[in-house]
Length: 123
Picture 1 (cartoon, rainbow, N blue to C red):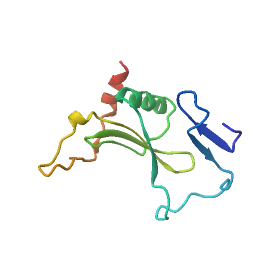
Picture 2: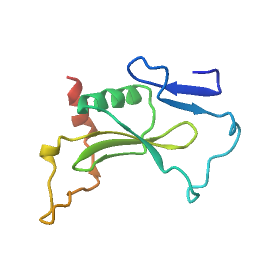
Picture 3: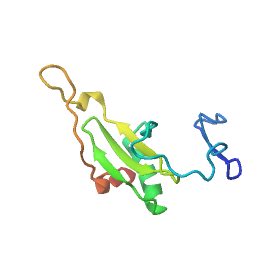
Picture 4: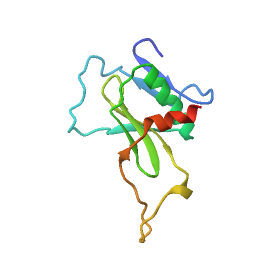
């Protein structure tokens, strides 16, 4: 954190991979849903267990999800950050588990993600 003006996100000890700030937008309302701009930020977790860990942290903090989906090739949690920006937290299933149509296109869907099953990764 940099006071109330910025937050920096990193992995592996690097100073920051992503910087978020309000230097130009502090006090501004959220962008209109139909306005041009970022739909959401997607953050890829390396394993299902890693996704379960962050889900458990969000659950323990009572942070609300806006959705949770099994896309057949990935599993995703959806939430809004404190400014109302969409965030997707997901992991990709191993490609060996993906299914394909006869024309070679990947079969995908948006099914309900079983969150209790996800939490079993922590046992």
